Length: 151
Ligand SMILES: CC(C)(COP(=O)(O)OP(=O)(O)OC[C@H]1O[C@@H](n2cnc3c(N)ncnc32)[C@H](O)[C@@H]1OP(=O)(O)O)[C@@H](O)C(=O)NCCC(=O)NCCS
Picture 1 (cartoon, protein in one colour):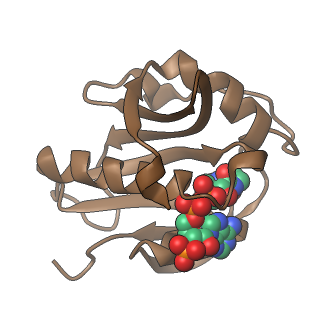
Picture 2 (cartoon, helix red, strand yellow):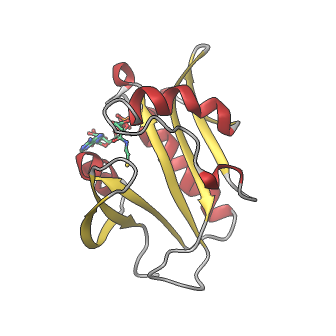
Picture 3 (tube, protein in one colour):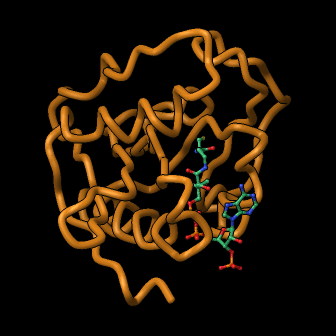
């Protein structure tokens, strides 16, 4: 089904409406920009349904604290508009982002995953490392997930 969709590069600010609608719907903060958004090498990917941006993800070159010295990308701001969830948009974004990270020398992609979305990451080959924690910004339970931990 995800062959229907295509991920394209967008500007950091383009992500804001979807971040607000999906990731800030029930959080104490409505902050939609991340300090890392403009880091060198940071890339923002979007999926459009016609003219409408319906899914987003941000890919930040950033080492994983548990694996210092290993080139890595952090996946942040993964979100699909509610009406478009479950239709392969997220899968398209993750595949494109991991391909981008691979092409730029990353050996690991990692994310701080909301527990409510953990199944999504596990479906895409991520594994959980460490104990769960409550994210300071969202106040939601999370686990850290990584790809290719064995490499
Ligand atoms: C998590 C999210 C980004 C997934 O995007 P999506 O476009 O719905 O994902 P897809 O339709 O591509 O689903 C891909 C696979 O992951 C699974 N999946 C998707 N969301 C899931 C969830 N919340 N829990 C468990 N599995 C999930 C799907 O069943 C699908 O598996 P399948 O291919 O075997 O059917 C989306 O549901 C979302 O925006 N959720 C709210 C915000 C959020 O929690 N973001 C993550 C922050 S860390």
